[in-house]
Image (cartoon, rainbow, N blue to C red; front, top):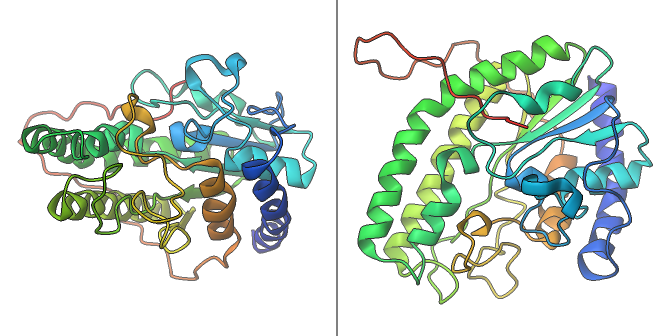
Length: 297
């Protein structure tokens, strides 16, 4: 895994150049989904799909994948001929349909998941300048409820990935702070709502880091890479919270994928020993239902 990490870091470094060009210049020349290859597989929600990055390919249908998303940029830089993105916007409910590309030959798996499942975009929209205090409160209640069930769903999904692709080096990426404590016309309505949004992202990232590490996978924290480029910054790398599509609220732009996610992926992996405890969400004594899958196709 160490050698693979070095190779991936080198490829990501090269991808920064191509990613920057794609973010500011001509449309990407690489398909958003790759092909039917199984060596490198990208999974996840609208973030991994690059739904807010622009140039969404019609062929990806409701999954809304973009060639500007970080999986496509990395694959393009590496000259990959055997890679696939199964990332899909609104990756909640249904079965783990994205896992059909995983197999014994899979060597690299990347995943960004959790924001769509917890309704982070809807929360960001509700707490924005176009929302109301009541809408923000309601959306936060829904987010909190979803976050309590996320650890069990993550444990089940990451174990399924391990079972299907036992040789693969797995990486789970987190999400950046959306507001960085600031309010603006395209962002949170006020400093209080900005703080609530940042706290929600921090709690989501904490859950993702905990369960990814417990599964023996690398967790990549992108918050420092995005520092100073929140939705209210002079040079934001995130989509406005006030657009008509709540799914896009706070999503990474093409620049965010190229200059935020990719450098975070290229950073050296931490050497902290992995915890092995299972997720144990509170129980009311009733028989627990199976966790909801996070990666439908």
